[in-house]
Image (cartoon, rainbow, N blue to C red; front, side, top):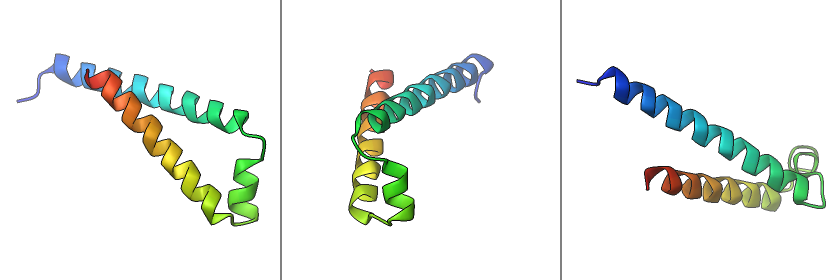
Amino acid sequence: MLSTTVLLATLLYAGVGLAIFVLGFWLWDRLTPVDLWGEICKNQNVALGNLAAGVAIAIAIIIGSAIHG
């Protein structure tokens, strides 16, 4: 059975992880010299889309490892 404390801690860690992920991806987007979303959506740059997906996965792995300990 799942206790209230464990549920709240899980939701807290998920929220903190999600906030850090969004901040990290936004920062990476701002530091790149091109308009990422314009290139991916309008110009259909598949290579840049794959790179963005790889960066998102890498950030998520780093955050998950940091939270898990």
